[in-house]
Length: 114
Image 1 (cartoon, rainbow, N blue to C red):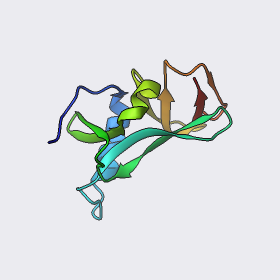
Image 2: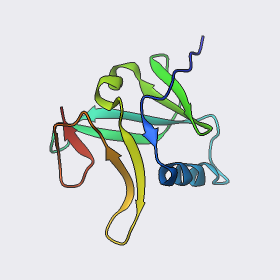
Image 3: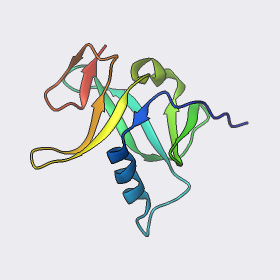
Image 4: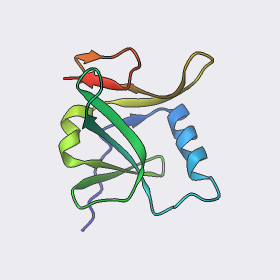
């Protein structure tokens, strides 16, 4: 049984637009969900995961502005309240993670510690 929960993270309008752009590619597999998570590693201890993936049994599922999102149940403690933005500036381009749970982060913004 699939249970939808309220989204523990937020996507800004810029992030939503970029994800929708990626999902509109002709060869995009619409059975995939946007996966948000963490993995060990990086200069601050943990690194963010963001990409398209199949839903797995131990995933939480939720929807943000029509975008199906999955996240491992165990990752919620690290990501609760996080905002994902997309920057299209001259100096930086890509997804930006604003995590209120991070006590340290690296200069590139893709690694953090709690």
